Image (cartoon, rainbow, N blue to C red):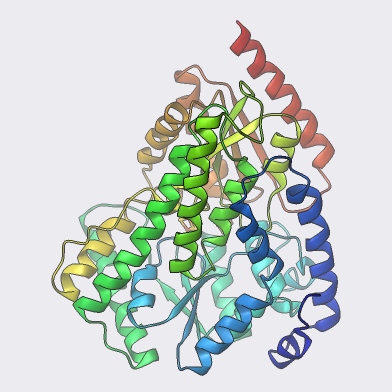
Length: 430
Ligand code: SF4
Ligand code: SF4
């Protein structure tokens, strides 16, 4: 029988009735979408366990960490360097939310036509449903898109613990200098918050931990190039989602174990999907947990998602940090250089992303690209135009989808994806 965490949830001020309802819905959705898949890798047992304990054991661990004096830092964006948080012995947790929860409450603060991701992180907090937010000592925002930038002002009024990093929108000399200074300012803030000094040794150690996590995710991505892919896109997406809040060392070990198993499955030709099933790359806005909607539709229609050109995916782990530094100042230079290789649509120009879409399409042998933008996510909705032109130029079918976290358009999306897969199949057969 599952452990009873009611007292813990109550002590951090969660809305117990609403929280019970949320867990029930999540458990049912997980059973229907994940546990119904056939022939999953054994290594997914760990990730199933993590999900079943997402508001239980992991929260208890973070509680313990706090008791031992550690600080918990919540983040929303892959530009915020996890290495610095670990270098001050902090716990780093991704706070993006992927479910349509608390929208009514959120809409008292932000316009209806705000992207679902922003409404969800506000909504989870306002509805008293997110234990992670409650346990944070500092919430780090960034000036990426306009929606987030303004939402953080509101979030600070509600939580009183938001710190904002100023991210430039161009990667020229001035932008790079500014971002480097912002990272230094963030390092100072973390030292002040925790009372721990960042030393070259600590920064190197934390860099190795985060790089090892990136390498494990790179390995997983590379294995998905096999036909058939040894793992479903749904499972790979889940692993990427879990990477934002699990303990990084344990996560890396479990992901590497799973990758060993996937290598064996490739040799044995074993997969969730049939050999020759259509291969789709998904590109665009991040899919925070538990946003499994598009993957469930694509894979429910018989195709396989072989990659995510997204922050919950390749954009998060594509580049490793150069560990060749001997002082904190040099380490900060490297952190700044690495994070500016991330190709978020909030930058202009952003041609690297177009190159990366082509690179992933080819490497993962995708036969079609679905561009996924959350409604009202202007940066990705606008960039879809160039993404289409780029993918058209390499002769690969392209579908543009704009949606949110609600289930209202499931029928319509299923029809559109089905028609797209038929068109892909016709091209493959030609
Ligand atoms: S899409 Fe852009 S703003 Fe969102 S997490 Fe990624 S880098 Fe950050
Ligand atoms: S999904 Fe788009 S609009 Fe929403 S927070 Fe991310 S970048 Fe901003």
